[in-house]
Image (cartoon, rainbow, N blue to C red; front, side):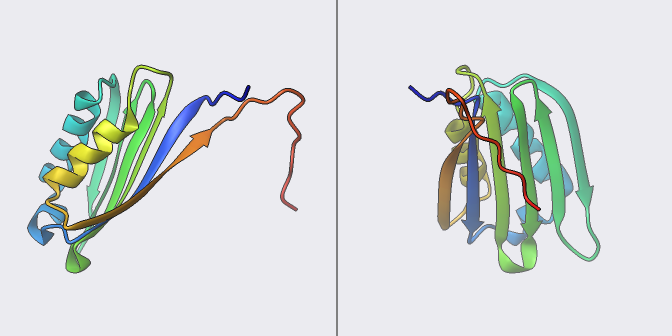
Length: 126
């Protein structure tokens, strides 16, 4: 039986309100609230407003992280929610973000991280 250390949701979020995606305070609040809604324990928060537009940020949680990068001019955000353990559901956080960004279209997928297998093989890029 395989078990994973974490769940990683990657979301492509389209049709978002540009004024939301370009406001660092709004994006930070949405991301923090998403972490809390999912039951995560927040450790650190760091967000940056780019000139002329866009916001990037990360919410470090005990269970891993939530990250975002926005392109307000395109109404697009790249969202990354990675949680470890059984307590926090990354989909709860992702769905909160999508709702608050007022997205019209989303594609998202979940990847299992740290899949532990007996006699796991190591592959190195080179």
